[in-house]
Length: 179
Image 1 (cartoon, rainbow, N blue to C red):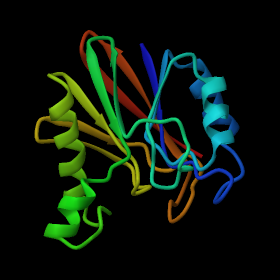
Image 2 (cartoon, rainbow, N blue to C red; image 1 turned 180 degrees about the vertical axis):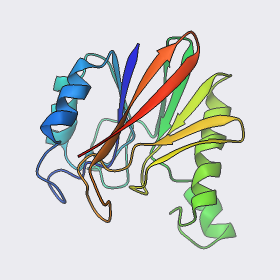
Image 3 (spheres, rainbow, N blue to C red; image 1 turned 90 degrees about the vertical axis):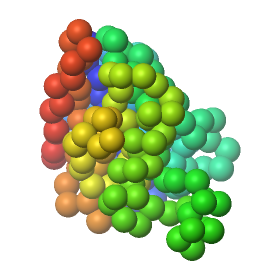
Image 4 (cartoon, helix red, strand yellow; image 1 turned 120 degrees about the vertical axis):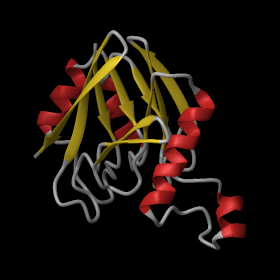
C-alpha cells in the first residue's frame, strides 16, 4: 500500500497551489495523510478531490470553520498512522513554558508527536505531524515520527517537500520527494 503524506500547504496565503508532481503522487496513493495547514477551504477540497482515501487534521493556519479534527488515525496495511498538526496542549504549555501552545523547540515537537501517537495506537505506529515546515524522519519514544515539511515551500521551507510511504506487512519504507 502506498501512503502520500503532506502538510503545511498554506494555499492561497503563502503559495498558489500544490505542485503538479505532488498532486500526481496524491492522486496515485492508496491513502493520503495531511497534517494540517491547508490554508483555505478550497485547498482542503482540492486535496479531497485528488485523494481516494484521506485522513486530515486541522492546523493553526486553517480556517476556523474547517471541518477537520485536531487528531485522527488511519490503519493502513497493519500500521497505524496517528496524525495531528504538531502542537501540544496550549494550557500545559502556557502554564509550564508560557509559550501559549506553540511548539518552539524540536524536542518538544518530537515529544508531542510521540505522546499523541502512543496515546492513540499500539505498535506498529507512525506519528505524523507538520507545523515546523522542517522534514523529520526519526524514531522517538518508540514511534516512527514523520514530518513531510511544507508541500508548497511555504514560510521558511527551503523547498517544497512531501513523503510517500510504502507499507508492507507492518513495515514502512519512507521516500522524501522534493521540488
